[in-house]
Amino acid sequence: MRRTAFLVLGAVAAGGSLAVAQSEDPEKITRKGVGELRLGMTHQEAHSMGLVGRKRPGCPLGGDDTRSARLKAPLEGSVNYTRRNPRKVRDITIKGGAEARGVGIGDRIRDIKDAYPKAKVDHSTDETFELTLVKIPRDGGGKLRFGVSTKTDKITLIGVPDIAFCE
Image (cartoon, rainbow, N blue to C red):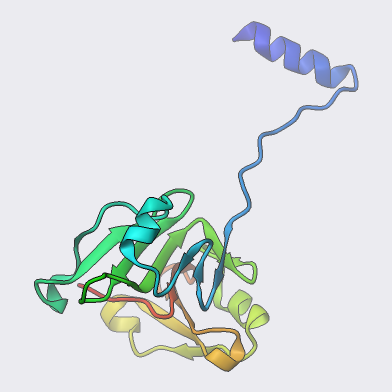
């Protein structure tokens, strides 16, 4: 450990530079999906491409036959499927690993409005879910929805085309 630190300091002192490992660029969120995952794609297609995990029961409020799956790295979040076979991606909820026009998890409402001038802020869920919704209409670059925490004023969820609530 001491030898490694000494070598690093020696390289920097000698005018060298250190290469720092950079993470991959975030996936791109559009109204059609996120990265290679698209709305309308079957679970089998998405799973075979390594985009989602195995199918599991979905929100109990939607009935016994609802299904969902977790997104695979580098994405964080989940997908919900249609109720008929073949199961197709109905909506995608992103919790990390992707950005829409440079706006991602941890950004603020002003960042959304800068990237999407037609964004509409909806405070109707502030008390119930402690989440302010920001809707991006289709003619404004969406159908997308951002969920902004009322406690931190930062984006915690991004939904394509909507954020599914199940609580």
